Image (cartoon, rainbow, N blue to C red):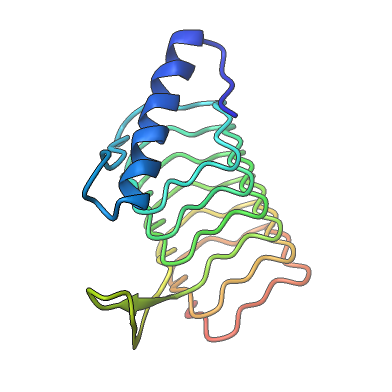
Length: 173
């Protein structure tokens, strides 16, 4: 359910999410991919939305609620996700390069590599890693999150909570 301070903004975002979810269901033959680059979505509630493959590069999602969102292969390059609530979200193969996730809640989130599939949907045996290169995770809560095979080189984890976090195969310095 989308909730925000502006009814018009909420309706517009809901239409974009609905069109994007149709795009996913129809495998690109119907609907429209969500192009939300540089859009201000501060404090919007996107809980349970499926925005897999969406373009959210440089978007402002400060304080956004994105619990249980499907965000597989979404692009959040340079996005502002400060204090966002991403609990239990699926961020497999996501691009969070240079994103600001300071203070974000990623408890129980899945931020792992995903199988690359061929045109018939069959796994190829290759993986696409989640990209957290140079991401700001200062003070983020990653408790219980899974970051298997994630590329975290240069990520700032200062003050981050990592209790129960799985980092098997993750690359970091």
